[in-house]
Length: 79
Image (cartoon, rainbow, N blue to C red):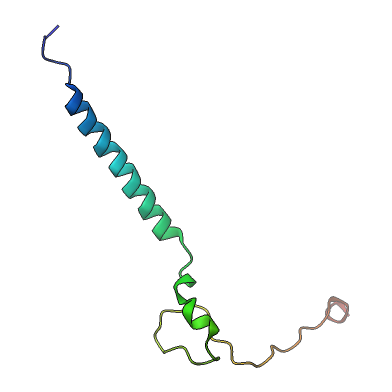
């Protein structure tokens, strides 16, 4: 065997730090890509309906205070 073929302790530590850093960056990227896109508008949730600024990035519709029309019941739809 070659006498200097093995890595020293500081070289092994560098390899371990690079691997752990790459894993942490990958996990952070997956977490950021998978989170709910509408979560950042929590501050506007307490404001009056329609008070959110246009183009605020919210993907959910702003409530207008109007009720949705009632859906027919299953009995009426089947008849």
